[in-house]
Length: 291
Length: 226
Image (tube, rainbow over all chains, first blue to last red; front, side, top):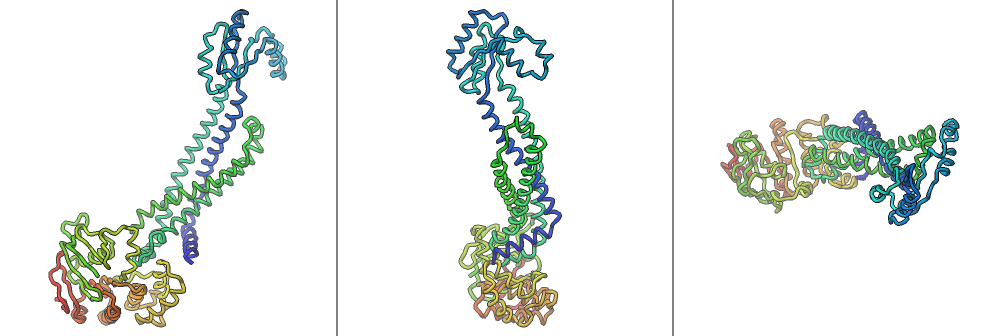
């Protein structure tokens, strides 16, 4: 009975102010789409870090004029270093073979390079790739070393780009959320005004506060939920059309986004959309429906 | 039943208090008029009893409950023991007489079945039998006030507050409303009425408390207006 009353009030309320309701749902859905996209990206970057950091190597290139004694001492240093998990030596010839495979599409370029122009090197895997700086400091001064290159630095550049995109998405989400919340507040004010007589009578005869407020709060929650569902649909369609379709080449590099993660966005967006709307509505009511 | 102890109420920005150190006691089953010129502070008493405003100083006790220290979430439940009637009726224009009264029941959690049993009874009591399904604009002023009284009384409150209930009505209709309030008083309900209608006060011959500039200047059993 009371449930039916509240439900009816909610539907009437949303319909009474339908243009505002639509505006509220649209801003809410855009904001939540951005939020969902940036959360997905965050999970993706995390997963990629796990994947790529496992494969990561530090390359130690030796000087062109490295002596046999220096070569031996470098090997000695690497063998005794506690940070090193495994190491492999790559001679000039091996480097040249790899180079030929890597650049096989540009034979002119390959021809211009001889094994002598490539340095010999050590490929080192660290036990913990995060400890690169420490490792670097420990072996830097060893004579005969030309250069120490951490693949992580390259990857970090890629991740920084992801990070920037993610931050941008969050900023947009924040601004749209602000607009959405103002619209929620406004809608609730209008609703409270149009029902001011009923509210006055309800207060007079002693209806409980939750009973007076519930229809208004639920109105905002329903709008928030619809916004969340739309936002999820945007994300899902975006994933299917963009990542699985047009940008498929990119996805091979990016490691694929698991469907599970995408589905996880539905409860997340619904929770955030409904929760934030409810709190905004409730706070607005505290100002407009004083006991 | 109702106890005001040294109550002072000063509204923000007001130069002098609306009520100034007022003490008064009202027993169960009494019928009390508060009279006085406009702005004398008599309406403030109604607001204090409903806890629409809190006193600046002093204590307000209603139904053995100290309203002054009552937690705000308890106020709605407290108000269920008080019925209230106003000069402007405060009916919902898009609901019939029946629906207006039933609304008051439903929003405090009574079922439709209870409303179907109780509402026709109380409408009959206030003399609106047969007009249950009229909308407020289809009723005369006196009939609208009867709906308001029915709404205030349907919950069988211990106290009925009436703030200038005859202010918008002609003298004959006013007397009919007073008869109705008298009948409700005879059921044991305490009635507190704020008015400046001298005719009515003189006819009823009930306790009269006169307020001027926020102070009680007269408190007389079976009193007259002036």
